[in-house]
Length: 54
Image (cartoon, rainbow, N blue to C red; front, side, top):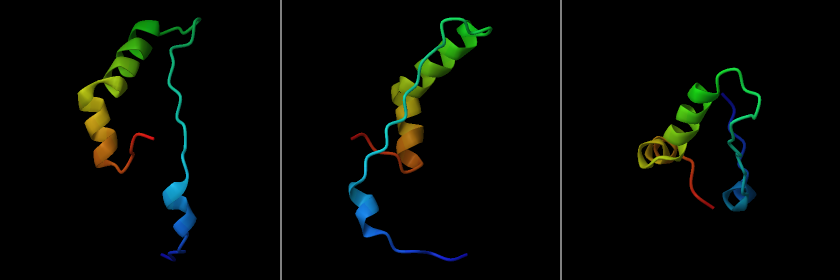
């Protein structure tokens, strides 16, 4: 594996929107997933994976 230093990346902000589509065939499942991701437990999973809040 090759690693390339990119120090500017520490200051970049990526936005990952989440939403349930109006005409979703599985709206209940999509809503449950959205609620999980936005919950404290979901936020902890994302933080453990290296994601941070802007």
